[in-house]
Image (tube, rainbow, N blue to C red; front, side, top):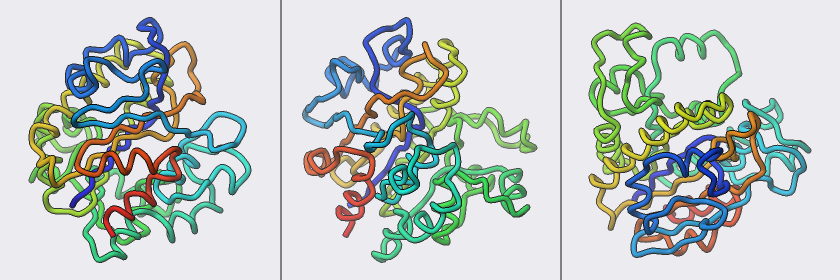
Length: 301
């Protein structure tokens, strides 16, 4: 049994209003095909079908204010209520006091401790590695978790071999970053590449953060574009995986893109979308974002 965690930054469950919610406005045929011809909104956030479980889960964790990425991602990837621990929501990067929690309790470390293989599937350009070598500690929780667990982050060579996934899925920006030999792929091709990686690792994490950026920019056209790109990516993934052997869980750290009437994050619940043989058990066990890491580690144990 292998597990894929699709972390989609800044995507909550909002209203059924296409004027403000690009999830409703976008053409998302793959998502609609698995959700009974619907998308997740506040009136349609709990579903069960032959292949998928959808639930709304809490990202506020009992702490006032708007959820943020530093504490929210720490909660997802460690199982620790990070905003409660430090007394506030904080982001986009984790605080210094959260670093020991991330180092000792992140999901990569726990999976590796089980004797299983783990992979952070995002590929990074040389600029990222130069940035980390400079000594800065301003890293996202995902990157920090992987690095502090001893995982080798994927680079341009991995991307060329289709053994890593570009954060934008299509690789469009890589020539601008100094890699003129790296051509584009379709989102569906990127999805099939991720499916292949899942065959070789017990646990795989892929992070898609363009959703959060689009939410902050309040740009409906761009938000629709990056959601439709991700939907096509899901299509390539779903068409290529062995659904009897891989459990896929999609979730987020906080709401944002689902309400373009505001530039800030929201306190909306976030989606928990699960497919695969253990979807029913996971759907019952996870009611907020701190439950995700413990549930997936238990599944792999």
